[in-house]
Length: 219
Image 1 (cartoon, one colour):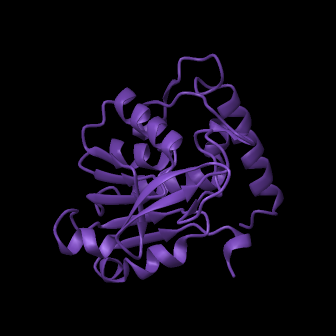
Image 2 (cartoon, helix red, strand yellow):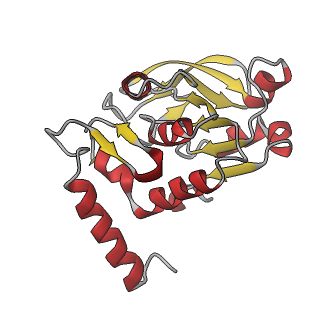
């Protein structure tokens, strides 16, 4: 069904209400029993123009359902552009999965680490690295220092920026620094072309690949 259909809209609205009434909401414990995934601890956070509840949209839950349905197919997962960690958490709580999460934005990375520690995920490993097409000590231009903020630009400087290490996925896997991933999720704010250029050999050997692209970044 399309995102414009009455069915999709009504289901999405019901989901948003359920999430707003859950333990993920402000001033709540943050731990919620999330169906087959079990108990998840995901603390409420303001993220600039949005908040952490916005990460539980219908599109996201369809993706989580996909993770669960394919839990026996993917053992090594790479989350490129992990943000504050919701996809990494869902991947890591599936028994047997090992997740390598990459997030270069300092505030988002800190919250990614918090989420991993709160959920005691010993098989989820986070790195403050921008997956790119080259090895470089660079910068990342950030909109602000709110955790979870989008539209950060690797390799640029602006009013707010900090240091950033860039590495190609091919480089990490070829040198056996990182195991060959079975599944890769990419969400990198318009930096997709650089990630893809530095990852093509790894893509050829993985079982599943998801690239999230906003309409404004298609061209």
